[in-house]
Length: 136
Image (tube, rainbow, N blue to C red):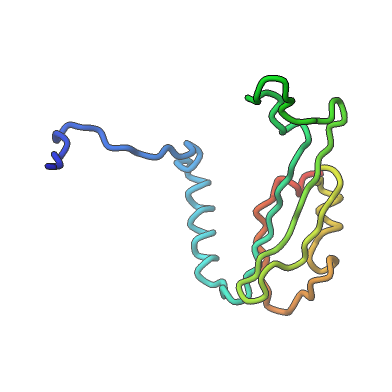
């Protein structure tokens, strides 16, 4: 089977990017961030992120054999559970925390690794992927 190359005027698939990346102030900040990243020691880097689940995320519709129920889902008792942890290159998963509810700025401050049981060592660099939780 022969594979034909597309015609020269054929568009290629491209990824969209945020238009803010073109602003002068954002360009400067991104360059500053790249410079900062060059100085990080990956052996001392701890990436902190969160993930959540809500009971109203369950599918309410689906297919099942005639006469059988799809699933039992609690109605009107919507709850949120948030899991936060750090990932360290050599120590693995560090400072896990499960919160019964959404995480806000107060819960985030309670989580901070220095207070969550993981020994913060001099030289450790923390990168928080859950920056939205910093708002109060």
